[in-house]
Image (cartoon, rainbow, N blue to C red; front, side, top):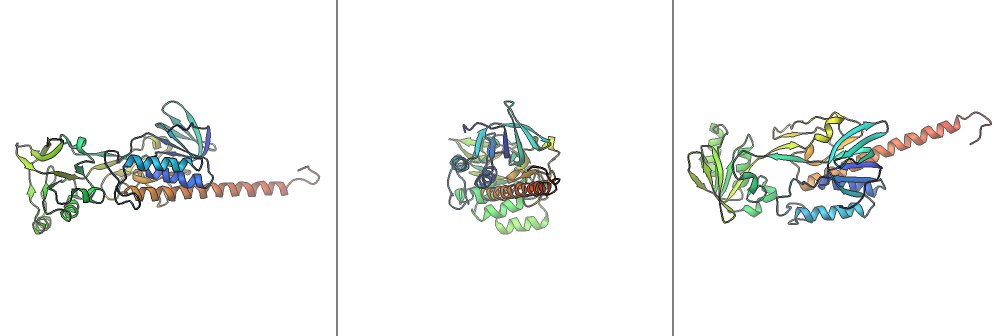
Length: 327
């Protein structure tokens, strides 16, 4: 990413993942000046491939983003490496400050900074995240089919995860870890699926030859497993929004926190839109890209409405000039 930032744009997009790039693509194709400022920390970076994305299934996340950056550039958009530290409102828009102290101005903002995945405090879990520690059956399920899968309960969605991963493998075990004991109905469901429940706290993953061979419990027992499935708690990367008066809130699903917005991505702060995981914690790549496209179109329409109003006011002013005045 070698583009140089200009002083002013119609729109600045903070975050260069699928949501941010697709929003920028829509804006650039609408002949808007747009810059994407990307900190280079995509959520799916640990994964080997993107899945369940039509036309791109199996493509690496890095390759997909590289293609997206070039598509934005071919319509005149700028894509720049950098970390936005703050964004503040000005009379005619926003001032966006990058970590190297550059400041650019924008009439509108699209925030697509994504989330951070908070994981259970279990030794080795973070290091295997996106490889043989997975969370989404639609992102990784085919790749772990027919393997020995251990689901570590982290909240109310544990049974949902068990159900989905049980569809992919006959060998699934639920680890209660720190979760409450399943209720009568859940125990009946687990028995019907043939899923055993392991009690006791999971303390770490046992690794051999760069692969998981089991989960170690606090009492020292090793339960053999090949794959670990667990739910993270997504937390919005929202630091840039604080100066704008946008504060993350608990997602309605209870699965993490997000920045609330209308379905179009419009936030409560005029001129600011959000798209992707920063507002929809469960969105996969395709849904994030679609949300970015929607937000980009809405930003363009908002700018068009502002420009139309300005044109009408100029025309009215011209008609109201005193007789004999020059044009």
